[in-house]
Image 1 (cartoon, helix red, strand yellow):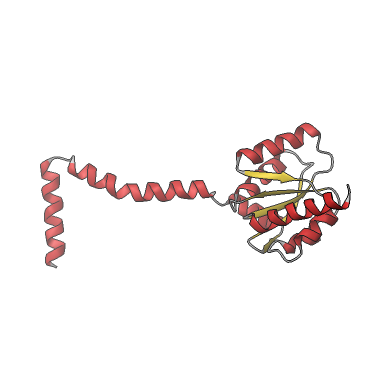
Image 2: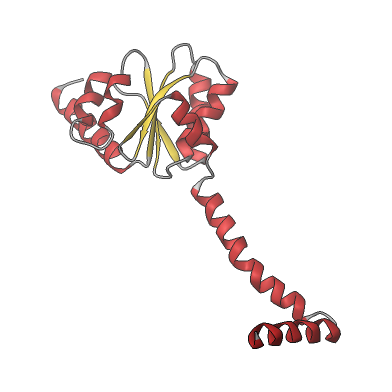
Length: 171
């Protein structure tokens, strides 16, 4: 790899370190090509990516970025899993590490905050962005469905609801 290629890799890694919501660092020694492809496919499905880079180049790219705390984790055969969603990469790597003991989580970073192994596992247990949006949407829809149910109820139920509202307003 010549100097121009190295500079290009450092620049690309710098963009990754700047824009990612979470970055997980893991050792991948012993993973077969098929297993690594499986990890990449799972990560792509979740909206993230997996990157193997020379540790020295990654450390250069980390300088001055919010992800700088992970520089100490970059030793040996390391893989970087990252995603814009602050939970997706941690979820995929944690699930894969439970299935395959050759992938060993070392730690990570989320928004400039360094994470140890337990921190990555805690982030993995959090609901993803899409899950949170679905929960909020269901909460917002619940009052409307209650009103629709009340409107469709027999007239006696509506009368009792209206009298309850009147009593509350009078009090």
